[in-house]
Length: 304
Ligand SMILES: Nc1nc2c(ncn2[C@@H]2O[C@H](COP(=O)(O)OP(=O)(O)OP(=O)(O)O)[C@@H](O)[C@H]2O)c(=O)[nH]1
Ligand SMILES: [Mg+2]
Ligand SMILES: [Zn+2]
Image (spheres, rainbow, N blue to C red):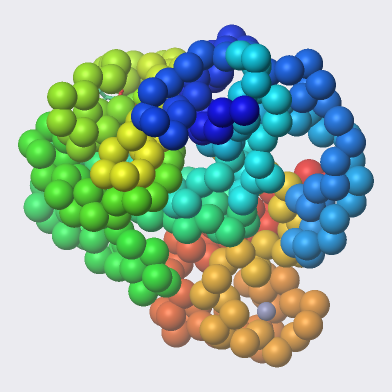
């Protein structure tokens, strides 16, 4: 039995990186397609395990065992994302363009939420800073300082002008890092800058953003600095996946610092005596951050 890690999956064919640094392309055994498993119920934030029939074919990131040219089984996953569909991730680099596509604090908060929910560490990377004037960049940096205070690292890069690339290197060492973000944000361009000699396909973003024009079509992991870098297809739409609106406030990690004294408070604008609203009024919570909370709260509540 040979052990390796899935670094690409295309049309049912797995590329597996073996321990001797060679790769093989194999299929998975039929029995891996669906089986009864004990999984953590994603809908609740508790860690209660419930039996559920799940599609359990291996995915990118899995540690797999190959026998007779077939993947026989794989190790239990440390974590698992749905979008992008990948397992065993150490950290996620959230790639947001400073411009083109337009920077959105709502999208940033939504994305952070989906990552934090999976207990994965978010790192924010603002790309294409060459497209901003120095005033615009200063303004963006001062707003994003809020996120640094929350403990999330923020990087500023330009692949076009090779700015901020060295700082990213230190973050990648020895880790499995996924590059994720909106289509056209510059994920593949950034990887091309980071890994010497790389030439992943990149493409001008069209005005058709939102109609699903993705340049990168599948997830691939690339070896670099004793770790792996994952390029992923961008998304054009993102939803809060499997979050109950009652649990939303726990995922806005700073809210717990402002001790809302009511147990069942939803921290809506008209909540009298609410600690979150008080903090907001004092300017301790970023206005756009609270607005993201409110918008998501309504969306999740209406979805029920
Ligand atoms: N001005 C400027 N343009 C950039 C920069 N990085 C990327 N671009 C451009 O942005 C466009 C999209 O870049 P990609 O790297 O293909 O974006 P992506 O995030 O991989 O897109 P998908 O694969 O569709 O998810 C291309 O036209 C790039 O040349 C940058 O730092 N500055
Ligand atoms: Mg790409
Ligand atoms: Zn409250």
